[in-house]
Structure formats: structure tokens, C-alpha cells
Image 1 (cartoon, helix red, strand yellow):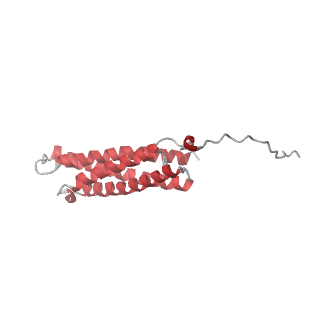
Image 2 (image 1 turned 120 degrees about the horizontal axis):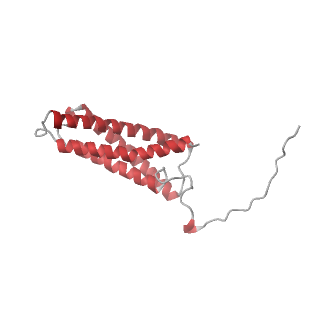
Image 3 (image 1 turned 180 degrees about the horizontal axis):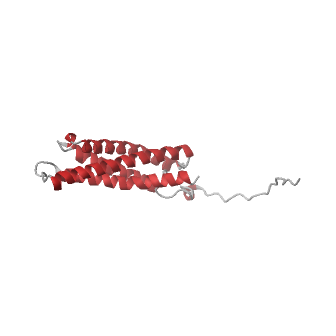
Length: 177
């Protein structure tokens, strides 16, 4: 029976980089993934747009009377909390130069991003439908805060546009293992 024997081949040490020339991220880390400056920028933009949608909608006095608008406030609040907490994790990872490509961490980020982006998209669609109903079909924008409703809905859609790349990059990273 032919069995191959293990052999050890000497390998030269790779040249080390010291000081300011140390690499910040691995080659597999694409910008937009957790622990990269692009990922931090996505998280901050998600937080800013979700906070804007929440603030604009909360300043209207009659948003609690419509379930879709309450749903938008809840989804934007959850997106704010999620994005802010992950932005803090990204800042920590960048400061200590740690990679966030652990399987459990990427799984948590993927599930969280998927849930929050789906909730935000559903809330934005529901709010857009009610806003169109109030503005175009009922023609009662004079009595309502249509401009604020439209602004909050637009901010929710922009939040979704910024959270979708985070989800897709995390999902791709998880699937490529």
C-alpha cells in the first residue's frame, strides 16, 4: 500500500512591517465590511438617516393615529440602536486593529442587519403608501403634515439603501467561508 509521508519544508519568514506601515485590514476585508473604515461610514450614515426619520416623524402631532407611521418610528428607533452599537464596535476594531471576521460575529451581524434592513424597508413602504393615500387620493394634505411624512419616509428609504450593503457584504462573507 502506498502511503505518502509528511515532509516539512522550511519556509522563509515573511518580512515584518513595523510602526506606521502595519496593515490595517486583511486583503479579504472589503470596504463596507465590519471593522473597516467603509463599514464605519455605512454604520454612521445608517444611524444619521434613521435618527433623522425618527426625529422628523416624532415631531408631528398626529403620527400615532396611523399604524404605519408608528411602525416607522419603531423601525427607525431599532435601526438607530443597532447602527450606533455596531458603529462603536467598528470604532473599537479600528482602534485596536482587530479583524471582525470571526464566524460567530459575522453571523450575528448578518442576522441583525438582515432583520433591521427588512423592518426598515417594510416600514418605509407602508409609510409611503399612507403618505400617497393622504396626499393624492384623499387630498387632505392641508390638514396633515404631508411634508414631514414624506421627509421621514424618504429618510427611511435612504436608511434602507445604506443598510442593504452592510447586510449583503456580511452575508457574502458568511457564505464564502
